[in-house]
Length: 175
Image (cartoon, rainbow, N blue to C red; front, side, top):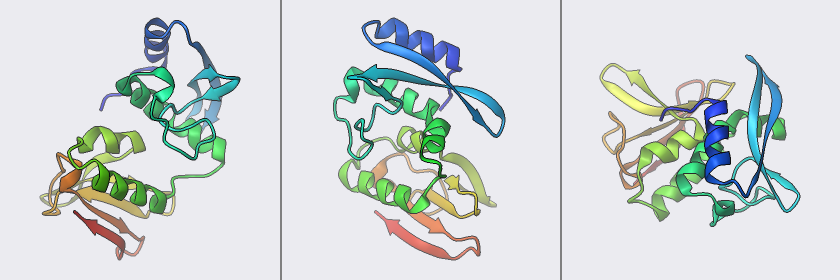
């Protein structure tokens, strides 16, 4: 999915949701300074409207945002969220979330869901392509269709593999 530049997304959210208090929060990343977009809700800054303000539960109402806008905001703030926790991507946690989504929402489209986590379509070997997410240790999370050779269209058609730096499969789920 195409990411909208910060200033355009900020303007869009302020226009569509004028009753919400929107702010740009600068933070430093490996490429320089970027801005997260947050909204205030009951005195708490919300950077990911898809989860509760404590960060442990799914936020079903997305704090009043349409699902498309909530996903756009979550994608935009992905690096900021990692900086807040002082960590990096935990591929085992994401593996479990993708498996759970496949089991509970098999008819959902795979591309926007995986894009929210930062997966990118990549060629994994000649003639094979997967949605790929890597951590700093170069472990990979690969999501393909059941054949293992192309991108899945729906969450019910996924094969998920957590691959170690040595190329060994550490975890696998085939729906």
